[in-house]
Length: 276
Ligand code: DGL
Image (cartoon, rainbow, N blue to C red; front, side, top):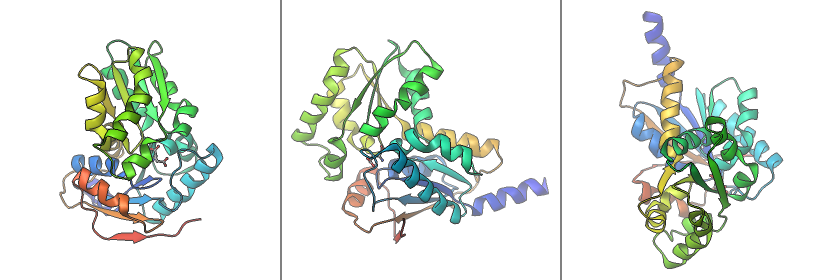
């Protein structure tokens, strides 16, 4: 018992490491803060090299390893890959190589989509790299092979969101152009397969209507983190004294304001880390 209590205490001193290509992964950090208020979260946004979504698999993997190592230097007890693109292209190699548990957003999102669909037709929106990787299709088919998956790359949405055009006619037109072909194919569930898209939740909900369920992997990822921490005796579930430390690899912060406002998250003082 004493030993267990000691493990728990020392786990509380260690943060959950979270990384994203930039600021968008704060959607996942916000979900973690909500579900696990006792945990310390150390978030690194690779703002110097964002976006990852149009880059090659080799580069995305290299960046993911570099940022993960920085999180390990901070003592991370578990790493959350909040970025869908990095989750799609680097999680399996990170898992093979690193000594701590690594959780991405693809599998939790796929599980939520499979649980939500009634017609067995699921749409996935994401960056070009995520869609080209077919990672969501694989994860969904591993759970239920008969689900048909329509995936659409939506590269124009990230810049519109970063501009803060969340409730805007131009954004609504872009949403329609990307989503209508999937809606015509009868999807009843749509996976928001990019960190940024939860910030467009209202606009997306308005466009798809009441019969299409939106699946946001942030909350499902947080639930997965909770269960892995508990299973490994690493959780700090009892406390309320957790916190969020945000570090960025470039100090430009205009999107940070948009994200903080939309998520109701106060990130406090941001650290600057150099990378590469
Ligand atoms: N974080 C990325 C994702 O979730 C979106 C931004 C980028 O392209 O880097 O896929």
